[in-house]
Image (cartoon, rainbow, N blue to C red; front, side, top):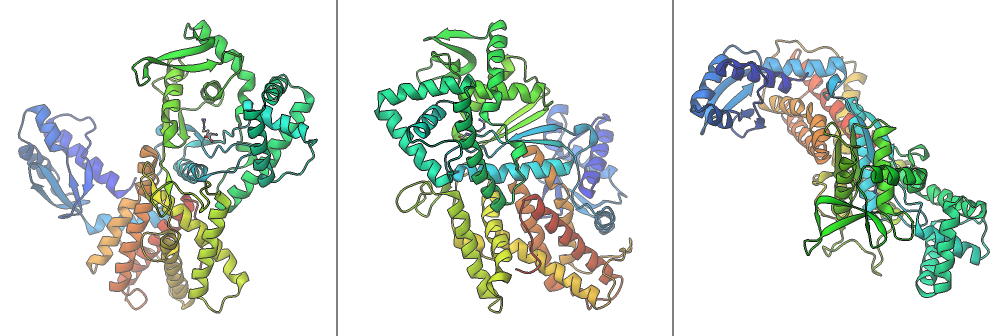
Length: 579
Ligand code: ARG
């Protein structure tokens, strides 16, 4: 347990004693401009108890005299409590982080989940677009953070590999005389898709033929299967190139495409029907769920089986959620999918609730995100107006980073620059994506993203590299940078204290991320820590200091290094030793 949690526990106990109720009380700790922290519990509690908030706050303050963790408590405003952390508490926190080697608190044993994370989910025979980029980056961070906290994470890549488009793709392949061993890269595949689509829309005979292929595919016809498999395999090769470039955890083992639920679909219908949840509507089997209406206020159907007997996107998602809970044992499911699919997912969640698959013990959440915009403030497009291709975007970022690295190190050759440019370029794109509240749109501005100044990934990479080199130098000069801090050492100046406070806040940040599913809290924390380190380093010479101050400063450096290193790693961002 970290310092802030201990402070919370102390406050909670003091509140309990003041009101004569031993249960848990949440003191709602916030940062404050006037003190280290502000507790905000008295207003709401006093209202409930019918007492004065300031009086209640004063009682709690009285009970905390002599605390080893907090000092200078003061009732402020209508009933807030301002408080400062003691130096001894902060020093012990740093020592504890170093001793355990863990800068972040983990989830309590009893709170650990089996979390299925549904993310990335590109479509076969199509380019990944920027929406898939966001899903992949955000989902990857959530997987890393949740598993670091101790949860069991099941990654699921719900690729679009089933349904009507495959009839037309297979039809087109066979019309062009292409067999299962035709070598098609992603550009060939997207062209094929275009040709198939055009014919499908314009040529009724082809439309019929394509429908026939869908039926054959679902019936397991060997020719249809082989062609389909070729499409999937070749697309997956391309997806993996993108995942490699992005440094994300996804592998082929995580793929559970829409097709993998095909065998469950009849059972799903049977089960929903037996529960009396299906209604026939224009020949289709539908669910009507409470609270879902169209613009005219009419009930909105969730189509489980289409009038032609085929299954669509919704049916697959129903089968997926059912399997995730029943077979995979999920207690929490995250769908990292763009905002526009909120209605679809909300209906799936409601349907799964009605079917009794999702119960109040399960948390099922849409981790929605906004769009990426270009310079003109509109959805990012190429100059020709086409949606931007992911790989091109990433290579552009690496090129830009290479340019920056060349400016900083004119003596480095291309080979030496390459890994750094890659780490910086990709790190820049990921950090810029993760820094904003995910629900917001953001502007894709490469120049700003790759800069080593400002709120950027490269700034953090730079900060981490600098601290590591300071420590490295100290060690090479024979200084013992790793000895323990004396527990009674006092801070010599405010910048040391300010850094220690940021490190104490950082300790809880992953728990926040897991709760809110908002990676930007981790990004902000790392920026705060790096910023506090900067002014610490300006104001507090480390190598020239005398013990025990020197040990304390080394300890602050090492804890900062640990937070930045581990934090960047959890964001899926590399941190090279020189940038
Ligand atoms: N393949 C879909 C698309 O590109 C995203 C799938 C998201 N996941 C899900 N379970 N529906 O829009």
